[in-house]
Length: 255
Image (tube, rainbow, N blue to C red; front, side, top):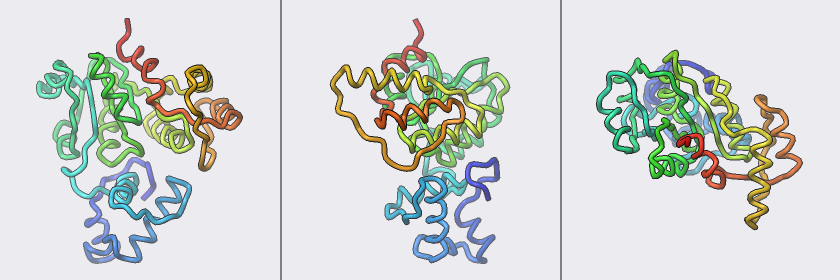
């Protein structure tokens, strides 16, 4: 199983049954689960530390395409108006955010849309601001590393031939790593996520007198714009999405 690749979504119990002969072979207290999670952490986060929190462990399994179940976790959406689905269209028309489960996404697939760009962000505050502003554009929030349910929705979106994805995340090394995975898997274009956007955000933070937060972690190259990684290494400052919401809203609510 390849992290981030198009593949069948397994439940952890199913995977454990298939590879160990028991549905409990990958329970949290087993040596095999600890080994697998350390490997996933190294591949995704650049560190082989074992995640102590249940949420962190679940996020690693999700990123590898292994779901706990089809209803417990959701993907945060706003403004989705698929053809022929009155429920989601109504939610979009009244400006309501919608949490979709994997079970619901499977029920709704295949999704069909009018030609549009769907904007994908990392932090929920961006989607919240879009809803507050009454934005007409559709927004999906990954809330960090995309989980199984988020990947399933993005897969369904790009399967619609008239949908294009645009991605923005945090200007830090973990954020760049997430962007690289999303852009690489789904062919998303960078959404105000190039070197000139980073430099502008740094200049604005300096102008506002915002304390600088140093970049930390393993350097990640930015294949969609190699000058972005170079600018981040040179400047050494992290800029999170919340600092550039005003600029992002210009695209979500044009005019």
